Image (cartoon, rainbow, N blue to C red; front, side, top):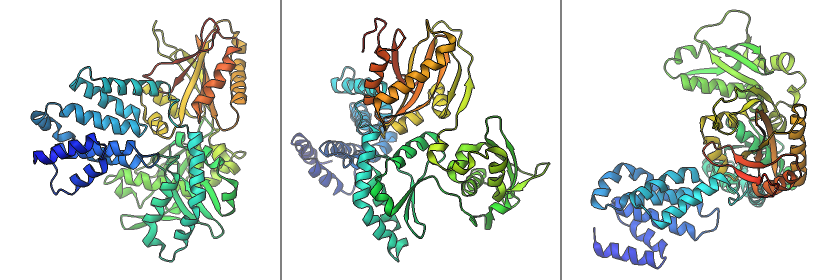
Length: 505
């Protein structure tokens, strides 16, 4: 490699001429580890000078360059002992500014191992840990929602023009890319479909079976500008449809081809076993694709939100079961008459879909030093996946929501001195008082639980700082000795809101 060229790159770096570095490196035909790493550094630095959301593609470009180099890292270290630090630091840096601190942290820790005591690395590690514990510095989803709807309102005319073109198929990629861009202030990875029902254009926000995303999309839909609704239907989840079919293995599959043995579950949901003669031979070859097809058909028959709300379990059989069955196209009638006659008319209303509550019980820990929520013996939630993931130490939902400025968490407080008959009333009073003090659009409460020592109030925060400010004021007058906040991340600390002396934190 030409040392003069490397010296020129370093001079441009010192002079903050990052675009010139990018142009010079990308003009070369062959790039080795060092040049690709330098190119990624330039993209990271160029992104730093941009305003969101223009910076995000640049940080992502840096990651796209760096991550494939991991297999070459060991060899690169033989040539340059500091390569382990610089590569890990640059990956962590890109993740950090993409609001993915949980992914950035292990890279910064590895960078510190390679260069012990490095001040910049230690500072980023501290930032990551602080943000994951108390994510009030990230832009809240409430604000991101306002920005995204403003962008969509300004650009929806362009979307309509693309959708009206006779050669719409030729501009499909452009249409999807433009809509993604308009939604990007709110969503790091938007999932949607576009259509026209003959009267209005339709933006369908797709939860993809993720109940935590359902809450997010319901919030986003609720805050759509009224002036947009003259031309657009903003929907959450795929709606029901008839005469829908799929093709697999050279065969057309419709809902009428699928036999269903259905039962109402104890939780007021639906359990289904299905058999399809046309798909049976394909189960051994591609079981995952068969399940995917069945779920798509189920979404069409019930509606996506209804399927998420009601289906507690689903099994695909290799042979027909005993007893009477119905065809899949009749399943909606079964739910409407046998499972939830009262709720079925609103089954695909996103707010209603978010309100399915599940009670649960726990076995309080007998350990002297138990983790938070391990003392719980009873609780209720309308977002059980968050609780399950918390106890597994799985941050998948937290990481995805964090990137969009959404913070699921809970308040906890001691139950000493609270009469058992008043425990639930206290939790309800706290929820109502905090919600009222916050105002609309700040928090959605998702349940709570009772432990042998602590009470817990669960929520999804759309603006965490506003919520915590309100909670501090409410807990100051509450009949508890202390109170704290904790996100639904198992491996972070709690944050005090009221001390035992009654002081606000």
